[in-house]
Length: 370
Image (cartoon, rainbow, N blue to C red; front, side, top):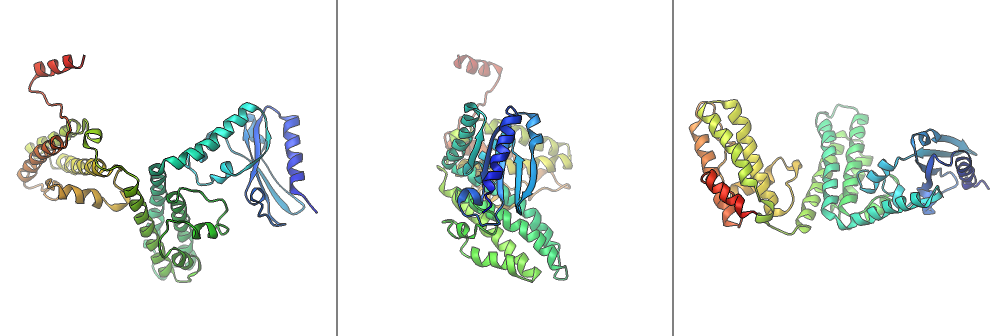
């Protein structure tokens, strides 16, 4: 019976004998590493080049009907994979090594695996990565939204596959894990996620099997909405609550400069400048208030509704809603009100505001810092 590892052994001998300085290590992953291979399974093996010359040893070939892909992963890319910046983490985490050039290379590789394990203690970072994946899905949702029921099924499935993959990648990150098998082979792992939408199985089946473009689009929208909801729920669980003195230190002093720009624009009837800075300051204040209260930044996927809701609940004036190029007085008064209210709000919650009457008072302050 043909043994693909005999071929891998020949490749290792070829590298170690003829190019010992070019390759740091060689490993394999996938079904052969997991013990689930069939007689037709290919051998997924990779190498990490030790120098620029090492990249030229990449080789793809077929022996006895079995596909072999000897492909390079730079140390820099391996670092990104270990940081979950790519979702093929299993390549590093679960691979088996066939060759290591030196103890130094081996130690460096083990550090990558330790980095993967350390990620298990950084839940909020995982959720940020999940949110980033989901953000990409919105591009494809937009493309789907432009299609009509008359468009061909290929176009719907083309976009839907991207949306499904990005949602499933987000779900793996929400569940603090990575996929150990490829698409189509990981259904059992997905099914066993402790955190998942209630209708995940049904929604996936619609995306995969429906012959109706409209049904596919609706399922993609539902899945993305449900995944975002899970991300927000998990963020709520993984933070420590409000911290005004720690998170708002120096904020008022910085944002006051923006408020002053709006006031100046109003006084000179400069609507374009007033528009950009009024919208900007309300967004900045609302985002920081949300972060200070929650311990994490509002999701860019919620169209500002999370932070604006909190902003209004705290009684701050709506600058955006009263923008009017014919009358600048209401905006100017609202900004001055925001300035006063924000300072009082922060001080009432223990935030020290560095405000001085004159240079002499500021000089005394500096002396106190010695």
